[in-house]
Image (tube, rainbow, N blue to C red; front, top):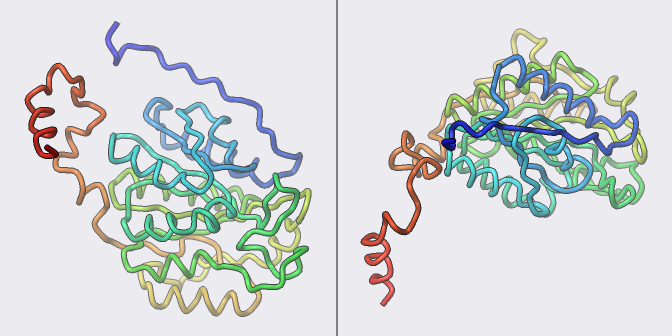
Length: 291
């Protein structure tokens, strides 16, 4: 039986989340998006972070990889470079992505790899019993600082090509945004960043508050998601009014990381013969360089 003929078997686990957790909504929307786009499970890999949100890679009928704390983005980028044909989705939490993984977040935006990055944002480290994260709003226990705003950060980096925010309590909008993000990445257009408000019902139940304060920016026909400067201004003004901007906030163009790094995208590393037997002369030349 050849490699291409090996049957693919995926057995998802039961989610570990608390009843009512916003991450259930993210999982449901992601399932619907993948199904609507008819992306085969064996052509998709979901890289999970740590904490409650990081468990999502166990709950889908796709390849899954559990990365180290804060390191899901370099892992996902490496996978995309090794096999650009895959649909690569990185999914983690706000603590994982904006604290210890904040440096990787900035450089992923700068490099613009064609992967999807879903951040389940609740301002809380759920597995450490309610510790506030960088996005914790004033009023959460232990929080007195102004929260980090990932949307403004993403918009400030010139090579950013896709910025969006959804709410797990708004399934119609979230399914649309996830599909748009996947299509953007799979078209080789670059990094599709989607911040998802995903309430933690155990420590900071923000469902009612976020339902009232979220604003769909795309509902305003004058909103232009291709004008970075105006989008930044509108998002900032909306935040200063005490509202949370959601929707497809920005789409632009910039060369993707893999298009700049790969000599032959049609022949990725994953399809090449890497066995030493067929590369003896190349290995000798490589070793000779370091003698």
